[in-house]
Length: 566
Image (cartoon, rainbow, N blue to C red; front, side):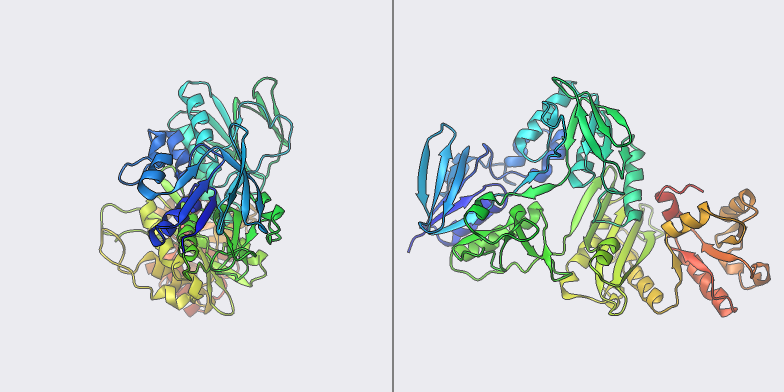
């Protein structure tokens, strides 16, 4: 029997669910209702439209074969009715209908057999004075994108302040500073950029990358007001006043659950719609997904919230299948992500170490720095990775990374993301089969090396100190510490001459013969270029009776990348 399906929200999840369902039940009727004038667009592409990487805003609305996904497209190609600029004001579950209001003010009631809530999310606007000034924008839809792009192309923006250092904040900062040379400042309330996603070390790497491109970043700072009369003049924080003629609010999002709550559907403590693996809400005739729904975090087993367009598309397919009587499942997610940082990328999946500890997990992390291609291949760059592991079970909880070639980094992150739901242990990473050829990877891939390093650490063979630990030792050095530089003379002697009171250079291949030169009454920290030779030196010294020395994870390249210029 033909059904009448209503889908509220037509961006990622709604349009995907509608198209999947119509392929399975072409005789049924599908209506998409959206309060905006645009549907089915790539919202994640907004910063790249503002930057100029995407020249035409309609490219965000087109299919891969260049057809514009507007009302006519859905009507003629998909046999789906789309009502834009139409707001659903109420869902009546008892009568199985929705109450709508059109742009012209007229109202109507539409019945459904099954309903989909793809209402998405709204950008969080800080409750501060000046937040409603004309030059304060968000970057959540195509209307925002057009408004911001028009301002910068007309030369009306010289100083921009972005509130929030998450995905949108970082990408919009690059968009403004790179192409348009706008003086750009980011204000972040937390003590690092990308809070909750990456470790402090990777946050500093990404922050330094942005600062090298003249973006100013202030963390651990609270915005208190936006000054101005008819337009924005400045942003005031608890520490400074920053001149601005454009402010972009990127301080997180809030799931749009008003319709669901008023309809009596179950809402989680985190404020999102509760769904099962089939993406059904507490009403078996109503489905939901995307930015307004909560799913399972496959690493912790607890609730998860992952507002990503890629995930909404996959959930939309599951919903479309189940609307047609199928039994497709969306078990949850591990939270894979990647963000472009000028020429580099920051990526991860699963839990960062701070997040794991916050969840009460006895976790540790290990870091490596290694070339992303074979060392003898001319086109190669360094990639930095961190693995987060539960100590007693050796279960891998997450991975993060930073690298100058995004494809090389994302390939490693995706390889681990794909198996995280299986709760792999570190030996799985050590022996993970990866495609190898010198132009693409090393024979012992950096990912395998990461697993091996974690195994050595948990087995007590490797005693590391991370970049944060080294920085603290270096800043508070009092003569009791000694840096043993294991690099070749041409690399290490200059540092030994610069810091004679706390630095010596003994190449790792000479350490056995020169063991007597190593002081036995110092807190020794081993250092090399990437951490490989200092680990070997650690083993050498242990064999010769010294247990105390620690080895700097990722070596001096990691210290430099974090901003510690020795």
